[in-house]
Length: 114
Image (cartoon, rainbow, N blue to C red; front, side):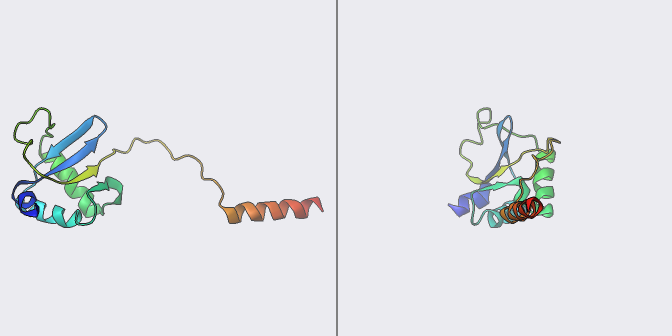
């Protein structure tokens, strides 16, 4: 199976509008097979900066192909899947205090009351 991936594998990129497929070069396929050696799906955020740049560059250089519209992608083995969620500018929800912070707050409140 890894020979087929090395010979003509594609990368599946999960986007908000559905999965898209990118055909990497031979050297990129070698590197991508190493990247996906333990996990078939990787979020974009867990990749190193170098890996993120490589994925972003591959996506921008090539036109995405949807599996439904591309006849040649039907037989192509998928090397791995990138969950690519573009930053949307929303801020994270406020952080909840940890258990130790909550305990300190409770102890301080008890001291104030006594």
